[in-house]
Length: 395
Image 1: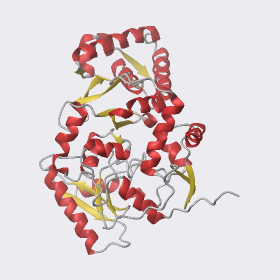
Image 2: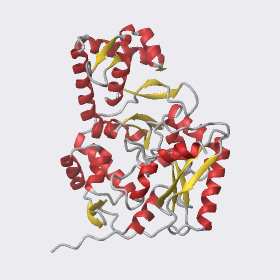
Image 3: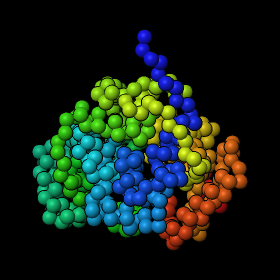
């Protein structure tokens, strides 16, 4: 008979989170790139998430914005691109080929097919016409370096073509070729998000050609991505892995076997760690607090979250689509929420007081005042607003 899989309790899972996600005292990173590598991916749908998430994990967060901007737009050591589940993330540049092969190819095929189908239904030009427009737009982007959709349409006017979408449905609308095509090209790994038009909080951005990368074997890339994520987030259940990657369960199981993942037990049942990660992990020596932004990869890292986020807190902390808002953490679990008020002040509220004392509240308040000082005149409103965040922002 084989050896019984080791049980990893909640305390150890929280310790692993604290250490590997660079949140505990003494584990903070020195560069934005180091943060991204530790987490594998930073949610990039809301630009502020990237900067606030990086700042929460830097040993010296004072220069977070210029250093992160430099990594994204000068050195290109970080790349904002489509990844898992058709979502925009920020990845270390060395992972772009892995992400494209492991998740992008399959999603891109569906996205292009859907665009061609929608255009055909609306009587818009066909796939051959779309290919001509795509080639022209990519050539224009190569000449410009970076450009908005409107600027590209100056070079390739066919990007302005419009077509009806979902005619007769409650969500009927009109799409512009540029908006749909550029999104498809992003998923296909041909273009990436470039420098925003405004400040680092802006959701309006330019496009740029994607960095050159080799074409990798899909199965090998999936194994590589899963191994990196398990190292950062293990133990994780099969449900966690399928949810985070967006893969079919057969792909998840094949990758688990390929990397030699080891079974362990958690409260939810069978989970997995990398083959060399079975030994017990002890917690950080000092207690720690953190203020993490909405959509932070730690709060969104697992599908099954009861071990770090009490179910009763979810209605206040998530929107109707499952997006988490800004969270307050203490020693490996979510205990409340925070928000920035119109006057720039950081308001926060504890929802789970179990095990919290004066030390915890003082640490949380200190972080709030530090964040308030760093943000200064900048106002940050999460793209996906949650009930408690809106209440605190208005307080």
